[in-house]
Image (cartoon, rainbow, N blue to C red; front, side, top):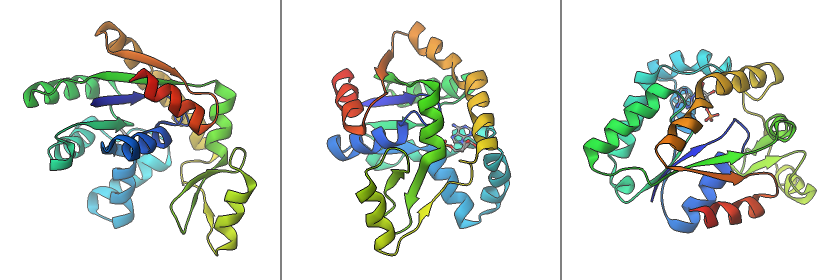
Length: 212
Ligand code: AMP
């Protein structure tokens, strides 16, 4: 299964991709995660990407294409993948199409995670990662026991650098301008499936899995 996950920041793409990966054994390929790793590793390229990401802007298309083509050539991606956060521009979508044509492995579907704007904001401003387990949590939506389990075990609830209010509003604007048009792009190619992504993680996952 080769799928693209579309949706605004905070629509739950990463969370749902991780669940699908665990369930169906298909790798989640997140350009955001790969870029954050490069930043954390302090590579020259990571240092360049850092300020772009902190402002909530997009890293150049050719850079992201380089990362993606390397990743999709790895053995674990040969039987399928879930693209999370890529493509984000029309150029990236065209590049992906060309890459998959060359590989002879066309995309099966583009799944849009559809969420109301006020829920997006709460998901983004409330999002935290447990420093001990890496578990994704949310101060508004996660059960209090799960939040407490992290802190009482000595963990910290860490907020992403780009999850502050100013950057969030820019990321949403960048999404509207650059990425939202991809909904039409995939609709025209007959690949678009929309999932109602309001609800608990399990509710959304049920709809997501049913849509595939
Ligand atoms: P994400 O974790 O998907 O929200 O991505 C975090 C940040 O990484 C974005 O705000 C961008 O700065 C950068 N990024 C991730 N994926 C892409 C992409 N496909 N194209 C350009 N920039 C990206």
